[in-house]
Length: 110
Image (cartoon, rainbow, N blue to C red; front, side, top):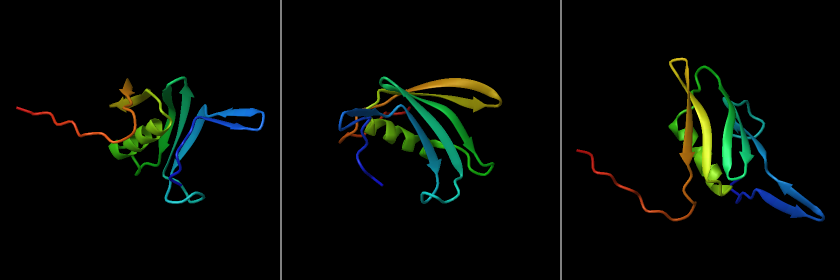
């Protein structure tokens, strides 16, 4: 299922635009899933509106990087989401770098 993703497709006289995506965390389609998330696309921005996981399946950095790569494939500029830390909602905005060959950025830490 690693096809290039496009937000806009024309078939006949119709234009189809991706505006909402339901993402499921599972090994195969149809298997029980550990997490579900809804993404809404508005212009060049994605919003993770809903994210729910089973108690033993926390949404982690690896999961977020998968969403980041999906947003890159859609050629989006930013992803917005809320992080809950100790019961407090913290809004986050992450800039999306264009997909393609990139060099790693190394920062020196003192």
